[in-house]
Structures are given as C-alpha cells and as structure tokens.
Image (cartoon, rainbow, N blue to C red; front, side, top):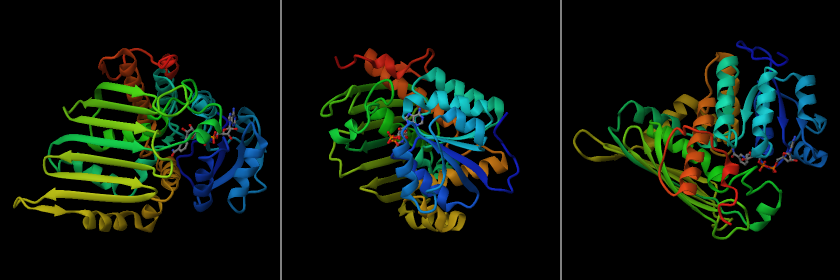
Length: 378
Ligand SMILES: NC(=O)c1ccc[n+]([C@@H]2O[C@H](COP(=O)([O-])OP(=O)(O)OC[C@H]3O[C@@H](n4cnc5c(N)ncnc54)[C@H](O)[C@@H]3O)[C@@H](O)[C@H]2O)c1
C-alpha cells in the first residue's frame, strides 16, 4: 500500500484535498488550525479553483498542485485524502484512495448508490482505514452529550423526532456548476442539503430506520432533481421521524432545526442564519420540568473546552480533529463509514418510495442509484 494508516502518530499526518470548490475552503481553514495535520497538495481539474482556494487562507499559496488525483495519491502517498469533488465522483476517488492505503475525510453523500456505499464501507472494514464523513451536524457542541444520555435511557422511551432543513438556494447557485441539481452527480435538496441532517436525527434517536414513506416535488428551481422533499421514517424501536428538506426557500434565511421527543425529556436545536440555538428539557422525579441547557453547556466545556464551541462556527474543525485522533487511537470516527453507508441507504429508500408511491423497507434489499430517479418530473 502506498499511503499510511498509522496507529501511533508522532509526526503530523499528511493530507491532500481533492476538489478545490466551495466546501474545500472550510477544510483548508480547519487544517490550518490543527497542529497534527500538514497539507501536502491540492488537486483540481481547474487550476484557477486551486489558486483561489490556496489564496483564501494565509500561508498556503505555495502548496503543490495536481490536476490528476491518481498522480497526486501515487506521488504524495498521503495519510489522509479529503474528497471534496462533486458527489457523483466520490465513489471512484474514495475507492482509489483506500486501495492505495489512505484514510478519508469524505464529503457527504458517501456515494450516489447503495451498492457503491456498501463497497466503500466494506473496504474500510477490510483495510482498517478510517473514513470520517462530512456529516457536520454530529460535530456541533452538546449534540453528542445529549445523544449519550438518550442512549443510556435518561429520558426514557424515544417517541419521535423531526427535522426541517430550509436551505434556500437560488438559480445562480444551481447554475454555478453543471453538476448541481442533477440526478447523476448531486441529487436534490434531500440528497445534498438534508442527508447529514437525517443522519443526525437517526443517530440521536438511537435506532435504525426500517421503513420510509416519501414525496418529493420541484416547486421553484430549474433543476432535474427535487427542490422539496418530505418523508417519514419508522425506526426499529417503533419511533417515527419526520423530515422536510428544501432549497425552495429564501436564500438569505438558512435554517435547520432538529427535535427529539422522549417520555421524560425533549431536545430542540438548530441553526438559524448561522446562529446556533438549543433547548433541552427534562422531567424531574418530582414531575416538574427542568431546563437543562446550563447543565449541558457546563458539561461540554468540561469535556471539550473552547474547542468544542469553535466547532459551531466550522464543524470541519471537529471532523479533522476526530479523524486525526481516530487514526492515532485506532477507533472509529464519530461520523464513520457506517454512518456514510446507512445515510445513503436511507436517502435512496426515500427516493425509491417517492418514485414508487408506497412505503419501502430499509435497508434496501436491492441496489438503488440516484440516476434511477431520472425522468421523475418529466
Ligand atoms: N459537509 C458540508 O457541509 C458540505 C457543504 C457543501 C458541500 N459539501 C459536499 O462537498 C462536495 C463538493 O461541493 P462544493 O459545493 O464544494 O462543489 P464545487 O463545485 O464548489 O467544488 C467542486 C470542485 O471539484 C473540482 N473537480 C471536479 N472534478 C474533479 C476531478 N475529477 N478531480 C479533481 N477536482 C475535480 C471542481 O473543479 C470544483 O473546483 C459535494 O459532494 C457536496 O455535497 C458538503
């Protein structure tokens, strides 16, 4: 193997970023703030994008540039490959990188089909290489602590959960790159803007999806895929999860809201135009309701210090730190390869249900690919 899957880390881990577009800037900012990582090269088919990216953060202007990802992996032999290309290219690059011994920071969605996601997940199990998914919501402060308490039964039975992701994008966003909003390379509002929120909701609720019912629509945007999707999942523990994901809302008002309801407590948290908010309530043994925000804020500060709060502004900081530690401690990252596979399976189950007009069982028994949705709105 050309790369390196160190289990004990004393020198900085080498990183290359493949794809120098919008999200890559968040990656570069995170790498620039972490001592354990060293950016060795960037890759893009467009040299201007690489130049723009490297100019966006101080100190990276002289970083080596490649236009061919295979050459970059073969020559640099990095410990970590960050995959930030259009979603339809994730599978081929992730596979090549792992076959050459590299750990991955893989942007969401893991792949565009269930069989490809399964292959990447199996490859990571077989090789022991780590995959940290770009599922930013798992890295927001307090979320992990509340999840642990739900899992330990502190709040009793989970009844249901809801999310909405109203992440408005206008025509200029969709026409900024040919892959956006296409079934082959992106999918619509659910596959791009909502998949990591679905992942968070299911993770918080602590059970696996077993059935999906969904409808999708194209209301405002001139794209191939949906700009609005609504779905209901039934989880194995009997709870229900309700999902709304859309880009057909006002672009300057991005909001994402997560709520989980339990027998003895409830959590609501979200981002409103970039501002995080949270409210957690529990029922005390005497039956009175108690607001628990202060308890979780103090607990988070004790365990993660200021760093965990910085992740609210750039969750990729938390993802890179977690990936670094998961490699050195030989453990799974918080948003691991299974999260990548499972969220693709759920999302494609949602698309399949919308296409066929009836509920579908999860995990999907046959392969389903986002391109199987081609022509849905024709
Ligand atoms: N986790 C998050 O919060 C988050 C946010 C935004 C985007 N994303 C994901 O990141 C990925 C990229 O999204 P984006 O908005 O940055 O896209 P983008 O179009 O802005 O950037 C993609 C870049 O990849 C380059 N590219 C295309 N083909 C390539 C190839 N074969 N080799 C090397 N480079 C190539 C393009 O030239 C472009 O510069 C998508 O999968 C998206 O879903 C994740």
